Amino acid sequence: MRQHILKPATGKKSRRRVGRGNSSGSGNYSGRGMKGQKSRSGGGVRLGFEGGQLPLIKKLPMMRGFTNIFKKKYSVVNIGSLSIYPPESKIDAKILFEKGLINNLKNPIKILGDGEIVNPLEVEANKFSKIAIDKIQSAGGTVKEID
Image (cartoon, rainbow, N blue to C red):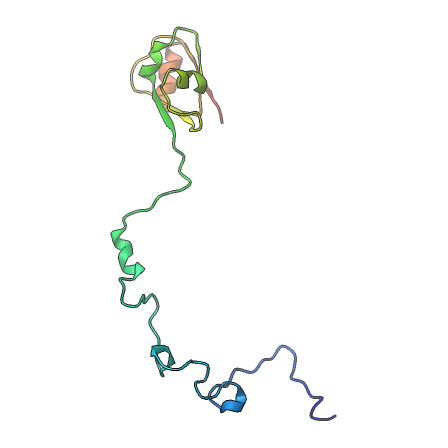
């Protein structure tokens, strides 16, 4: 066995020894560059330091809350506004849009129980409040929840 054939054990890697002369590859400045705070012994900035600018961690308490990007925005229709339809008519998103009760067809529709209804209607929407279901069914109508 000769010295030039020897290899280190697999999986073991010795730590980098800096400041051991120029022939080692990490001499003179030992990989720290030339001057500046980061080149000094014990130098460097603390975690979250932004060069004197007000750090984000100090700004966050001023920024109240956050915006939930997954929130569903419903088009809301009250029971009272459905009284314009004749008895036994079927009400869905398209019909509500034509009458101008909702602004667009992309948002899901929720029917709320504000107001009174006397005509029996067949109402189709994504969500209903409990009061709205009770009022529609007590007027003789039917409720259909769609996905």
